Image (cartoon, rainbow, N blue to C red; front, side):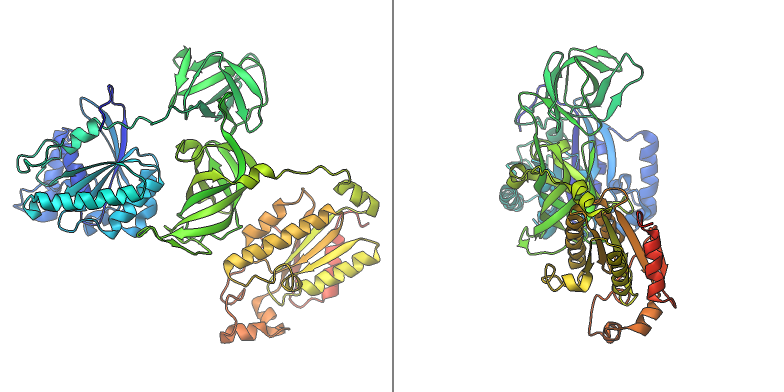
Length: 615
């Protein structure tokens, strides 16, 4: 490894298979670095005797980082344990990551901010499937420098041939994943061989100790980055000051530099670089600053300030890799919030090109992603964003997806590249717009969205409402859920992912019809709140009216006009809403029809009475 002149802060992770000794190695590293004060060392001695029995003189260094009771009881790492330590040469932040497959998302959390990874293998076992998985996650999260620590060398009598065979196998694996900076060293964590100092029991190893490798690891970016700063806050304490605050995530900026605001495209020059310690002439990556410009332009939180000569790319469709961390599966075309840098926009996964077996890196066909699965996907946003590929800039290339119902983080993602079609497709202006079409029809365009269980009476009520509207001279169209499955949705089944796509297509068609100036009635079970919310978001305020036809499951089964409930109860139909598939009741429908025991005509009149402009 190249020795930098002044090593800065190093963020690294430790990872490996179960019982390879990650926590023991990290604890020993802290011990050898002199980072254990007397009281903590005394507590470690007490905890070690309690763990291994009275009379044991062995220090169990794993207890320093295995903080959860479940970890100590099972002897494994579950949560990510962060530790700060330093030597005379360098400061460190280390994340001890879990090895079990079910905790892949925990490992990804630790790796997302790391610059180097220490990967452990047991000298008796060599490179395992878990080792491949950990290395793949490191590569996926952008770690390009690895230290392979072949642990428990004392259990193979410090055999050089065993070490070199493992090292050769691992270098081959790393090369397959595009990582060429690999340093391999033999260690015995419990006894400290090659951890803090060079071991005398392995004279055939000529390299540095683990601590020495970390002290002089060069993680300087290969290429000089261009200036990038996501705007976090528009600072306006009084009428005399306007500044744009954020943390520089690439390159440097100086006073009088020309910058461009993205995605808008406005240009200005930097007048001042303000910090808590006073003004600066220039600032670089990692510094939190407030930039004042030479003129006032429209800038909001989420915009990116970039070098005017080398701006960031702008797009709204991407190829990306996703690591799914949500408990519920990823369903294509479901809407999520995407947060990249300081920008939050609406997004949907348009397709899953394939999922990746994290243990073998094989590409597999998939229609959904489950917890801890990785997929190559296409992503579509509702608006353009400024971005970099993840390989070039983690801040502007890494993102998270957020569930719009509970605000839980469900995925972390890495942008690979913008899809070419996103730059080649533009909105075409037309002179005859929605207002003109609606005016010629003398009506207010609307979407009436009827939702409820099968057999609740949605289609019957919607049909009566349309007949009444037609009698009033309105221009209407009824999109019935069963009818559209004979045409545009003929290729879809009733799996959760197909239900999501079914509603997306119906909503798109309804949106076009409203744009044509029509009153469109949609009758579809539409069981998921998220998809109904996504449909609503396509329309302008006041154009979407949700009509909840609320009939009990018992009443729907009693009616059973198509015999579907009987088939579902017998197992002849699977994924049937209300039986073995969920229905998520509306929380705030504009019209709530209590359908049990009421005539359809009365329900239709209730809908008509709620519509604007029909007096």
